Length: 83
Image 1: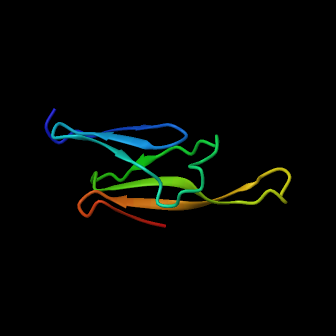
Image 2 (image 1 turned 90 degrees about the vertical axis):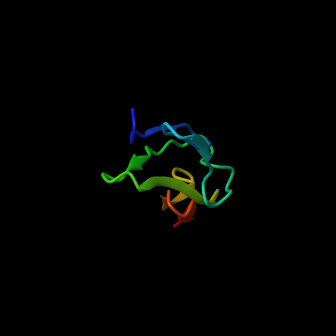
């Protein structure tokens, strides 16, 4: 359907599919991706931005919640991440 956008996520990357193309979006920081922690991605209502919580650090001294996350915003027009 013209103008449609599908977003699929797993623990390691996001897949964005539109009628024009399909692309893989990798997190802005390579911290072993999310190391098994899943954060749900989201598409902004106008469809121009993707938001995804990505691991930016791994802190083994914290026994329960080792990963540190940041919100990554992907701009489709510029194909760039911001955290």
